[in-house]
Amino acid sequence: MFSHVTIGSNDVARAGAFYDGVCKALGLERLADYPSAIAYGPPGGRPQLWILHPADGRPANVGNGITVALEAPSRAAVDSAFGAGVEAGGKEEGAPGLRAHYHPNYYGAYLRDPDGHKICIVCHGSTPST
Image (cartoon, rainbow, N blue to C red; front, side):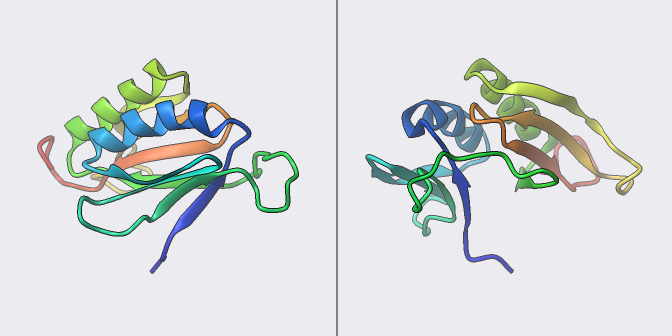
């Protein structure tokens, strides 16, 4: 449904350290690397997650009520991506675990990236390995 998502950053290099670890754990790689923008996507694919300085030149800020959710291939990948994000300066907003109030197999974790954006990492699989 989405072509791509952009997330504003005031320090793309700092944000890159966060997203490099999170995305690697999800099987994504950095596909674009510019002074004011970086982008991630599946190996051999196209950039779909862009981290960049806002085009209007104003400082990036956090949108209230906005969460960017990245799908993980397994619950272990959720755990790994969450750990990598916290290690790279992300702030915990909800440790990995089942959230059956969303649906019975929703295994997710929430954190804030270095600019304060809310990021969810989620696996919708029915077993711990999916």
